Each structure stands twice: as C-alpha cells, then as structure tokens.
Amino acid sequence: MRSSGNGNGGNRNTGGGGSRRDGDGRGRGNPRGAGSARDERAGGAPQRPRRPRPEERRYDVGPDGERTRGTRGADARGGAKGSPKKPGRPQSGGRGGQGGGARRGEAGFGSPSRPREFDARIEERVRDRYADKPVIRTPKTFPGAEQEGERLQKVLARAGMGSRRACEELIEQARVEVNGEIVTEQGKRVLPKDEIKVDGLTVATQSYLFFALNKPVGVVSTMEDPDGRQCLGDYVTNRETRLFHVGRLDTETEGVILLTNHGELAHRLTHPKYGVKKTYVAAITGPLPRDIGKRLKDGIELEDGWARADHFRVIDQVGKNYLVEVTLHEGRKHIVRRMLAEAGFPVEKLVRTAFGPIELGDQKSGWLRRLTNTEVGMLMREVGL
Image (cartoon, rainbow, N blue to C red; front, side, top):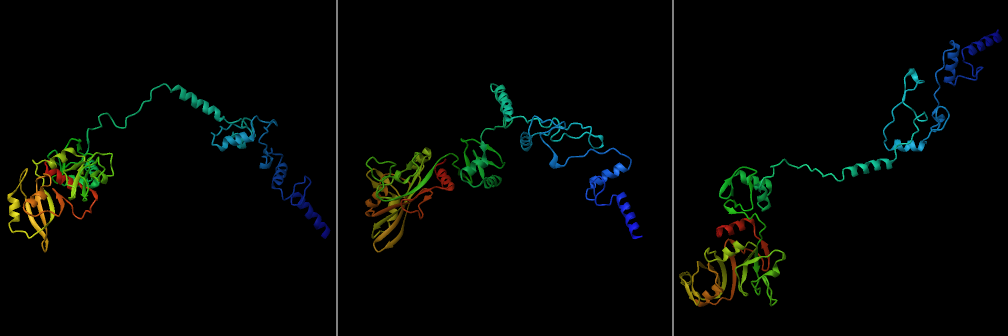
C-alpha cells in the first residue's frame, strides 16, 4: 500500500510540475520556464518575444547581426553632453502591437552625433554674415528723457550737507534756496551756475577747496619761496590744485591763515570794501593806562595813515605782563604791531586767533584742517557771495 501511494504521489508531482526537474529540464526555480510549460499545455498559445537580459545586449550589433556604423563610445559621448534625444521609431514587435522608441543596438541608433567643428563652422558663418552691418544700439531711455542739470538733493549730498535722505528732509523743511527761491519739491534740477543756500548760507557745489592753517613762527606767507625758506606750500600735501593764501602774516606772527582755490572769495576777503574783521592776541608789557582802549578805537596815526581798532580788551595779566585782544578790519602790513608800538607798548608775541567767522580754537601749530560747509557758507555770506 505504501509503495502504491508513493507512485501516485510521484505522478501528481510530475503532472503538476512540482518535481525538482521535469523532462524539459525546467524546474521550480525557473519561473520563466514554468510559465512557458504552462502555455504549451494550455493549447499551444503563441509565445511572447523573449527580451534579452542586460548582460546579453550587444550595443554594436543590429537586429540582423550586422555591426552598426557608430560605436558605443560615440553615442555615449553625445548623450553625456546633453545632445537632443533621437525620436523613437515604430516597432512592430513591441508589447501590445504599439511602436516604441529605438533602443541602443537597434537599427538607426548607432549613428554618430554632430561634431563640434560643425557647430563652430556655423557660428563663424553667422558672424561673417553680420560683420559689415551696423550695430543698432537701443537707447536706455526714451528720447527727451535726459533733462538738463542735476537733482538738488544729489548736489547737496555731494557738497557734504549730509546723506541724500537728510538732504531730502532739508528740502521738505523749506530750508533750501535756489537763486533766492525756497524749494520744497523733490527732484528739482539745478545747474552749476545756480546759487544754492541752506539756512541762508551758500553751499559750495563746485570742486572748491577751503583750508585753515595755524601758521607757526618763522614760516613765510607764500606758497613757494625762491630762497628755500619754509613757506605755506610746505604744509599742503595736494600740490595738483593751486591754492591761494588769503592775506598775509609776517614771519614772526603765528595764527590762522586761510587757503583756497576760490579766487573770488579770496579777493573779497582781503578787499577793504568788505571790511572782514581779524582778531589778534598780543603779549605786551605794562602798566597799561585806563584809556588805552579808547585811544586805539579813536585811531592811531601811522606813517601811512590813521589806523583804528574795532575792539580792545585785556584778557589776562600777570604782574606787568598783559595779554590783550585787538580786533580790526584793516589788513595793512604789521598794522597791530605798529599801532601798539605807537601807543607805547611794543608787541612781544602776536597770534591771530580769528579771520572773520573762522576761529583758531584748539588747532595745533602747523596743522592744516579743512573748513566745514557751515564755515564756508559763513565766509561767503560775510562777503556777499
């Protein structure tokens, strides 16, 4: 009984394809083979075309067994550089009867990509074709957009009146004048010849330079000295711009002296018509009479005419040594020394502490500083500019 059971079981396994190896050599471990066997038993259905495994593909052999023109290397280089994909070809043997794209190894895919020399030749022909034709440049702005002048806030910012936003606030606050008219609108354009004022002070909009030098003792009041003596030009580092010294100080007098390249301003500051005041501090030896100030204000007769002081006061006194301040608007040579000497008090040391609105302050001897826009405006207002 046991032997017959084993035989029946073996027949069932053989019929069901469950044995380790059947007559065709296809076993349980080969699902493709098992499927083919089932199709054959089902009635001889047509077999589906078997796709080759990846390791079985030949990229240089067509479907008819012939080698294609191109090689794998040429096609790979073309594809790696991003060349346009080749359109698919209809394929009769595809799945479901639909045409699919051509694969590598099929007919027509192995053609080489277009060489770079061909593209370069085309580009060269295009350049040669348009080489002699004029280049049409499109204007950045439409015709007539360029307006004459420059925006007011930009001019003020370049002149050092603050940032552009701060200059716009000055305009909004009605603190800016152009040719005597108050400007409140933004974007107004001005010309270099226009007169601009902020809070009543003229703004130097052009490339003018204004300096104040604390001239030391022993320096000649010239920009150059043919005898090689130390002069004002030795304290100016920018030799490319010609500067004028406003007035003079004798060699033994120290103090503030102005330098500028604004010729009209320098002329007016020294002209007697405008009467710009200068202030000096002198060290003299007393005792001083009570009426010394009145005598200087009434006038001292000198060899070249009368000279009068606008203001006189005693600053300090140590025993018989006095420091006095004298203010006058005349600019004759050695006028302060000669006035005090004529009054009976020779000057031992003389310092000019102010020239109009420009004061010496704590500026050290031999130092050159640039005037602020406010100081320049005050100077111009002093002489009507």
